[in-house]
Amino acid sequence: MGTSGLPKDMNFLTQGGRRKPMRLQKQNWTDLAVFGGAPAFSDKLHVGRPNIGNRTRLKERIDSILSRRWLSNNGPYVQEFENRISEFVGVTHCVATCNGTVGLEIAIRALGLAGEVIVPSFTFVATAHALQWQNVTPVFCDVDRRTHNIDPHQVQQLVTPRTTGIIGVHLWGRPCEVETLAEIAERHHLALMFDAAHAFACTHKSRMIGNFGDLEVFSFHATKFLNTFEGGAIVTGNDALAARARAMRDFGFESNDAVTGVGTNGKMTEVCAAMGLTGLESLDEFIAANYRNYKQYQRKLASLRGIRFVSFEGAEKFNYQYIVVEIDETVTGIRRDQMLEVLHAENILARRYFHPGCHRIEPYRSRLPNPESRLPVTEMLADRVLVLPTGTAVGAGEVSGICEIIRLLVEHGAEIRERLDGHTSRAAAPLQ
Ligand code: T4K
Image (cartoon, rainbow, N blue to C red):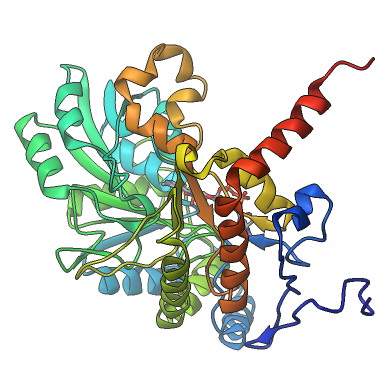
């Protein structure tokens, strides 16, 4: 045993000045940690480990915030951040917010959405809650089998006299079918907005996401490609909408002492903007790390039986922030949730985004008694999708280790399942 108490054959890797977790290579499925073996990684590997830019620059910026004693309320860094985002996206207005969810809520109000709004169910719950929080009913739409994005064909069928808008979500950073959605919205006089939480720095037909619909909303949460600790932004080319959103973000103030309508406190702080400005200077580095991991995962996983690796190919730009696989248990012999259990035991904290689908979460669940017929693709994806660790905190050695465990799982799926099922049924058996 080494000094750490772990077996000597663990690879100890260091890269880029950060401590890399020790990695144990497994020869056999019976060595899996879920069956009592040592975990493959000494430290937990997370999905959503923040991308952090140049620390010295960040600390300098934080120092100047403290010297200026200007911490919030549309300070100089927030204004600079908004300008940088507008320039980068190529859009006239950027209204930075304290997080993406409040950005969505403000956007929904600024657009005057009411009654029913059509949204995908296969999204983070914030998309639906941002509507419901304002007593607007989310009407859940299914998604496309290949892209995981809202299905325009079903959107069309869900329009009623109560519908006021459509919210598309560019899931995993892949653009929705924006032209078709825009055409439906125009035909029915509906507002169209996009939840672009995953899609900063991605393009559709060579135009940056942020330029589509009436407006789009980014998230700059810690787990996102670009982060401001917590943060978000509404981007639009519509002057009136931008002015409304800007006032709503600041309690309804349009100018000093002049409140012109209802508002909230959705302001971004200076320290958050400083983080965002610093991250913007390292975007190329973030993309390069994500792309390298993406290609390595693709090489190792795309050919595995029962695994569908969600690819981002073609001429568009992507941020590769999410590594997404679908598990077909009829082929792997092992259920997605059992794979998750095995991976977690190995300290690989994969996530099953966006299980179980918003429509299966209250208060929405009771409203849709037979989701299987309305949302078959969502139901299937919610049972199949796994999201794997990536980002600047994950290196080639870790990706390789994760893929080895997945290969072991797929090659011995039926045996592992049988043993896990045995564990579960023994655990569930009543005490004698
Ligand atoms: N629309 C969509 C489509 C979204 O995906 C989101 C957010 C929103 C709207 C709303 O935007 P925000 O209001 O959040 O700006 C996480 C994020 O909290 C959430 O922002 C994100 N989507 C969602 C997909 O993922 P959880 O519940 O998975 O968070 P949590 O705490 O489990 O963190 C995820 C992983 O990241 C963990 O394994 C640990 C790691 N992590 C997290 C944080 C915060 C770190 O390593 N460091 C950190 O600082 O929702």
